[in-house]
Length: 388
Image 1: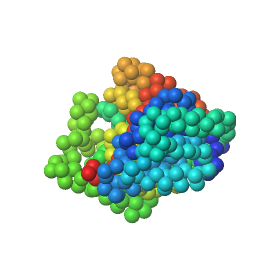
Image 2: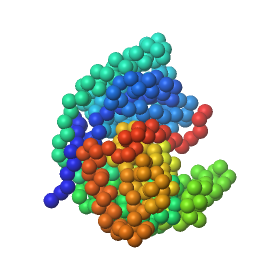
Image 3: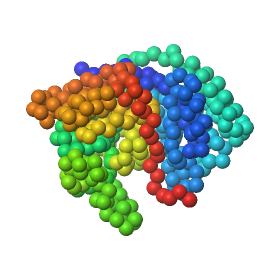
C-alpha cells in the first residue's frame, strides 16, 4: 500500500504542498516593488533575485527559463509578475508559460504605470485579487508518484556524511521506491567521488554526463587561475573536521541514497521523470535551493552539521542536523536531530523513518521550523557568464 499526502491539485495536473501567490520580479530592478506588495498582502511570497539585465544572451535565456519554472511551480497557486519594462528577460514568454498552466496570474509594469508608488498600489490590488481567487483551494489525497523531493546539504561538518546525509539517503531510496522523484545536485561536492555516482547511471551516457559536469565545474575554476580546492572545503567545513574536497564529497553523495540515477537535469529544467536525478547546480545555498524549486520540488530536505538555517520562499525546507551539539544549540532552526546516530542512540533507519514521517506531514501542511520564523527569502539564480 502506497503512502499518501494531502496536496493542492493544479489545473495542469501537478500537485502542490503549499498554496501561495508567487510574486516574481522579472529583473533585479523590480525587487523593491515586489517586497512591499508581499508585505501588504497575505499569502504572497516574493521570489527576489539579482539577475535579468546586462548579461550575455545565454544567461538571459537561463534566467527566463528559471523564472518560468518557478512560476509554474505547483506550490504557486497564482502568480504576479512585476516587470520594469526594459529588462533583458523575456517577460512575454514568461507570461505565456504561466497562462498555459491554467492558474490565475497578472502582471505589473513599473515604467508603463508611472513609477514605483503607482506600481506598488497596482500590485497590491492585483495580488489581493489573486490571493482571494486561490483562498478556497482544498487539499486532496495523492500518492507519492505526485511528489518530487529536492535534497541539499550545507554548513557541513564531519557528522554530515555519517548521520544526516545517511538519513536523507534512506528517505531518497524510499521515495524512489514509492514511485516518486528525487533530485540532488551540488556538483562541486561530487569532486573525488564522481566515479561512484557515474557507476550508478542508468546508462553509460548518463554516467558520462555526470563526469562531464565535474570536468566543466573544475574548468570554470581553472579559467580564473585557481584550483577548486581553494574554495572547497569552505572554512566552516574545515573547522568542522572536513580536511579535503574528496572527504567532503564522499559524505555529500550519501544523501542521494543508493538507487539508479536516471539522468542529468539542466539548472532551470523541471523534473518530469520518476526516480533519482542529478541536477547541474553549484553548492551555495541560495542558487541550489532555487534550482531545486525550479525542478518542481514541493519540499527540500536539508542536511547540516554546523547549522545552516535558511529556507526558500515558496516551499518548506526541512533541516536535518547531524551534529547533536548543533541541534541543541539551534533547536529553533533544526527540525530533526540526526546527531542521535552519532551518539549511538538511534540507527540510520530509525532517524530516516522520522525524517520520512516529518516529510509526509510537511507535504500535508505541517510547517517546518524555518517556515514558522519566516526564514525564507534566500534565493538567487545560478548564471554562467559575466555581468556586462
